[in-house]
Image 1 (tube, rainbow over the protein chains, first blue to last red):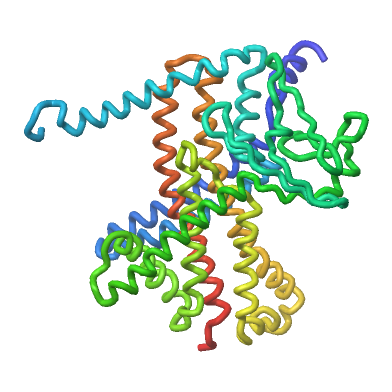
Image 2 (image 1 turned 135 degrees about the horizontal axis):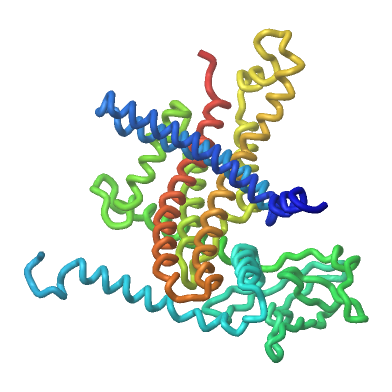
Length: 80
Length: 357
């Protein structure tokens, strides 16, 4: 393979572990999920400031559950 | 500023402490500069994985460590010796394996696992499979330590409550009472209704066991620093306990909900799904706790080994700053994971014992 195709092939070789790519994608999912939870929680607090402690408790619970799912993916990436 | 000279001000004291730790962190660099033949990334990775895994000796400071007893049950009888006999030693800078001649077989330590050595000096895989390892490793010692701490604390406040019945709480009592009342009022009662009394000991034990083990893992020096809840066998045991408690206490409505779905024509799909969900809920509990604790440890250790990978001293303030930040987050995560495990356990138990309404 010579010329342009050769340089293209050499430039797009994958270095490193593909499991790390999987863990990174899981981090994207966790980021989007927890960002949505946080955003809606803050909006709810702005609408009704006296319910702040209940909203905060539920937000932390939901965030821990979403983060659990992302960590399943990290564990699979670690094993693989 | 408060009255008095500048030496009394809080900012000065805090910056003095920070400067002390910063300078302290500068010293270990000389430890690894001998290994310049090896790639620092590989050395760092090996060191991190060794830190997190179980081992037969307890490192105290640098290279010194306390050897722990090895107890093996072979098919010819029980063997008991100190792991100092099989620990790798450095001979002229090269690690060399030591072979220990026990009563029945000879043993050596390969990757922190005991293996049987045959008469020709090679590891014998057939004989190794027949040897069961009941040693007292770091896991076991750490488990005993946290068990002793829990027993001391809770038997202590038990006797204090009896002596001071009716009076206001004081001392250790007043420290733990908010946590215990929190577990009862915010975790047990909303999820389990009025039948919570039977399950309170279980929930309190799980909460404080996980909390103490997580917090011990964050302490960086000697008696702390080993993370028991980052070991998947321990979290597996906790979730198996929850599995048994939920399923042995399930009443008729719980089992009916699983095996007789509402529209009868959903039968073939819903039953496998429900059976899988009986097992997947404790498995999720197990992996969530394990992964959170292990990930926190790996991140803190990796940030410190950045100093060795880059090889310069000027990375140290950045690295140490990040590690302090990560440690604060880890304390938060320790509490949070204990709370989440307890909350989800009480949720599952509540679903199993609730009356039909």
